[in-house]
Image (cartoon, one colour):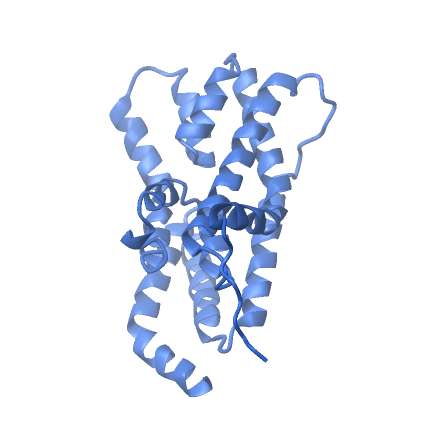
Length: 243
């Protein structure tokens, strides 16, 4: 029996259809968090164009809340720049991890993938098991595009209808945490070796104990980067043995 499988004639459309259900579980969390952001902007006195364009062009949840507050303060671009830089510093570690996936061969799509690299697009595109029948670049592009659209839509809906929709948003921030736990569990299930995951958990726990929950994120990311860089040859050899 032949194992030949035809390549789709419309790779863009095929990738778009395949990427949507993969991104869909993130939609609820993005819509609710975007809704909260749009509602917050409305409470500050800003019309719908502000959250629309800020969500579309800044596209960094925490930073958008910071910028919203900064718009009402004395003009201080350097302070705002440094603050947003510190808050978004974790993206540096994501970008290093995605160098192999977001390579120059992707063409112009690469620039959009880089500019929309957020926690969720990193998680989904990094662990994606993409069929060889699909164009990997377009698949990752549409995953990132769908997430982007979810966030912008939530921000616009929150600003336009937030004050007329009787909805309690208390605790909704845990939605994204829950999604990351599910992603971690799924990745754990597929791993041939759990050593890298265990190292990450150990480093995170140590940093949490040493510096506390308010400041442990950056030390954790730096620690994981250092530990995995040192252990990389040994981990790679272990994976080859498992294979």
